Amino acid sequence: MIKQLMFVITFLLLLQFTLNAQYDFEVAFPNLTFTSALGLQNADDGSNRIFVVEQAGKIKVFQNQKSVSQTKIFLDLTNQITSGGETGLLGLAFHPDYKDNGYFYVNYTAPNPLRTVISRFSVSNSNPDSADKNSELILLTYNQPNPNHNGGCLAFGPDGFLYIATGDGGSFGDPMNNAQNINTFLGKILRIDVNNSQSPLNYGIPQDNPFVDSSNIDVKKEIYAWGLRNPWRFSFDPVTGWLWAGDVGQSSWEEVDIIQNGKNYGWRCYEGNHTYDMTDCNGTYESPIWEYSHSLGLSITGGYVYRGQNVPELEGKYIYGDYLSARVWSLEYDGINTTVNTQITIADGSITSFGEDENNELYLVSLDGNIYKFTPTITGVGTHNLIDKFQLFQNYPNPFNPTTKIRYSVPSISFANGDKTQRVSLKIYDVLGNEIATLVNEEQSPGIYEIEFNPATKVKNIPSGVYFYKLQFGTFVKTRKMILLK
Image (cartoon, rainbow, N blue to C red; front, side, top):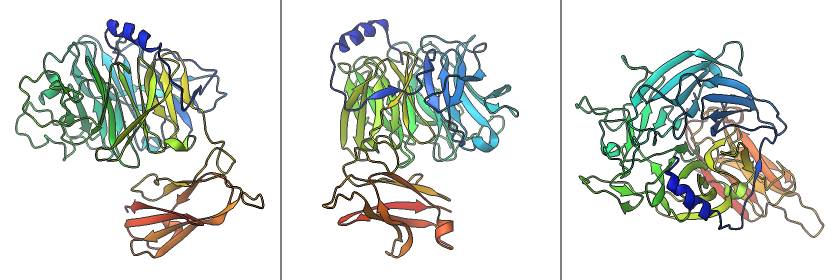
C-alpha cells in the first residue's frame, strides 16, 4: 500500500490543489485517537461495538458512541508479529455466526522467515470485550519474499466463505511474475471454507474454486482470482453480492475491479488498462471497471458500496479513496460498462482504510489518529431534513431469509394548507401481481424510513421465490424486486 519515498514528494505537490467538497467528514470519536490504525470492523452481533485494528498488533474495541472516551484491548499480538512499512496486523474479519460461535479471523505478518499468517481466534468465555489469545488456530501461512505488497484484507462473502487478499510479493514490477503464477498464493484473491475442514488442512476448498479439480499438485486450489498487484482493501456489496477491490498500481495507474470467480486481472501484463510487461502474456485478462492516473493519487484504498442512512444521496455508490492524495470518490457502476466517478471530498489525513458499523454507516480510517464519518445530510428517521425527492432503496439483505429491511425517503413538500405529511403506501406483491402484504399505509412526515419485512408474520406458507415491493404516493410509484430463499 505505501509506495516508494519518491512518491511522497509528488503527494505533497498534489495537496496544493483543492476542490470544493460535496460531502464532509467529521471526527466520529473526538475523545479517541489511534496509532497507525489500518482497519475498522463491527461484529454484527447486536452489541453496537467498533473494532479498530492498529498496525503494531492491537485490536481495540469500544461502544459506537460519539462521547466514548475509552477503548479496551480486544487482542494484542505485538509480541508475535513484525510491523512497519507494509507489514503488521493487516486485517480482521468476524465470522457470520460470531454471535453464537465467537470466532474471528486475522491477517498478519510474522518474522523469521517473513510470512503471512491467517489465523482464527475465539472471544473469551468470560469477557465479550476480550479475545482468548491462546485460542489461535493457524489456517494458512505463506512466505513473503519482500516486506511490501502483502495485501492484508480478509472478509466473508455472501456464500459464507472466507476471502483473502494477497499481494504479489513486493519489490518492483513483480520480478518473479507471481501474480500470473497459479502455483503460488501471491497476487491473488483466495477463498476457503472455514466451516468444513479437509484434513490435513484446517479449512476446506470450495467446490467451485477455479482450480479445485486440477491434477497438478503444485496448483493452489485456494485461488479464487489472480493477476493482482496489491489488493489492499476489498469489500462485498450486500445488495448485489459484488466483490469490489482497489488494486494498488505500479508507476502510473490505480484501479477498481469487480472480482469474479476464475478471472485473471492482468498484472504484471497490464497496469490498469495499459500494458506493463507483456512477457509470456497470452491469457485472457479482465479489465478494471475504473482507473485513475497518478496525477490524482498514488495508492488506492478500496472502500465500500454505501448502504447507510445518513447520506441517502450516496446510496448504491462505491466510496473509495487514495492513501496519499487523500481524495475520496464515489463511483457508480451499472454492471455492464457505465461508470460515473465523482470526487466528493478530500480527507484530513492519509486514508488507510474504510469500514462499516452495524447500521452500514461508513467510516474513514486515517493515519492522523482519527476515525471519520460522513456528516449526516439527514437528521434522523421521520424528521425534517434535506431530502427533496422520493426514493425507494434496494432491500437488505437480498436474497433474504427469514427477514429483510426496506428503506425509503419521503421528501419535504408543502401543500397549500401548509401540511407536510403525506399518505404513503408500501406493499408486497408476488410475480402474478397479487398483493401479499401491506407494510405501510399512513400519513408520514419527511424523512428516511426503514421497515422490516418478516413473511412469516405477514403471510402464511409463503414460498421461496421472487417478490416485488411497491412504494406509492400520489403519482409517484416505484417498484423493486426481492428474492426470498427458504
